[in-house]
Length: 277
Image 1 (cartoon, rainbow, N blue to C red):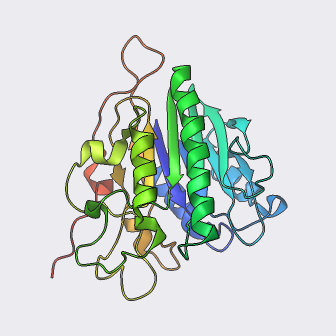
Image 2: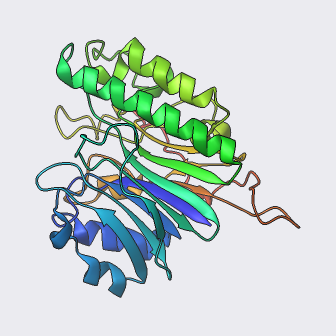
């Protein structure tokens, strides 16, 4: 089962990009973030015509998350992250697909920092850590996929950057991400490629895409051991999002209903190669 996460950065504006990628990559499950569309504006008809069922939580102008499943409708289990009933930002949705519990996550950005936006990001992160611990304790196969808005280490951003003041790199956010991993989650992309560039995001400004000045913001954390890769070609398309689709392949273990084994993705969709200068 191929599970992907993709910050689409406005689903209606980039619907053609999404549909082209779905037809090419044929993922079984897709977690989307930054829909930037309220619930009634979600393009369900076009997605169903592409062969996918969907659950979503939209929000006007900003945020919004969804889970798509090829040939099936995800069984929704949560439409919000628990821990703060007053939080109305559409940043978390959770559903079961083919025996795997999947969450689509859009963690707050936190900029500008310091200030209330960083405080909200860190508080939201604490709620995610608490809920993830409950999911881990349940002993079911889980994928926590999405745009975490965290660069985990200096190996996850282009060398020579000047982003030290960016909320994505703050030590508090990095420490929270590590505490999440310490619960036992596998960082699927780094499980396959432990060193070297593995960017998932290239900003639209300052020629960062053609100069390969990227960072790793999109993560797939998994309860079993898994492999991962980044589909870079979609980021280079006309009108593309500033994030690339990021995905893993799950292969059930023989004689078991749950679990996965390490499997490398096809070379054409593997991790990005450094730009030749």
